[in-house]
Length: 107
Image (tube, rainbow, N blue to C red; front, side):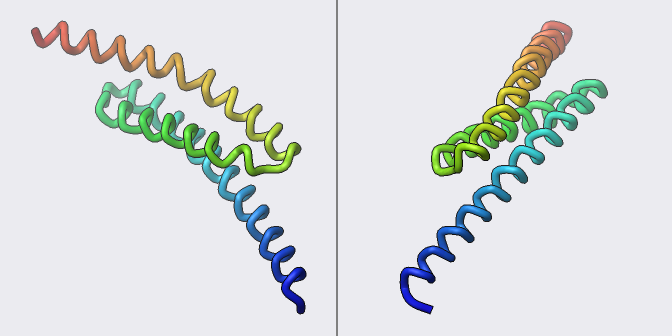
């Protein structure tokens, strides 16, 4: 196997690994959003806040790797990112309202 073949194979492997990573990160963010919903429902605001921070960081991580992907994968990931962002914002607002409500009850 010559050097050019090795480089090509390495690039292909890198592309596959990046794709798997991005899909896994999207799934992790989705699961974390479900955890946020549950934690908000039971009033565990600290865990909900921590999970929201994880989702926001996950989105930033995905965005950082997105430019290095194929057009097809980029389209797929961008569509899923739009959904994640749309789900994230109302949960952030709900958490903020719950936190303010808790603080006003304890004052």
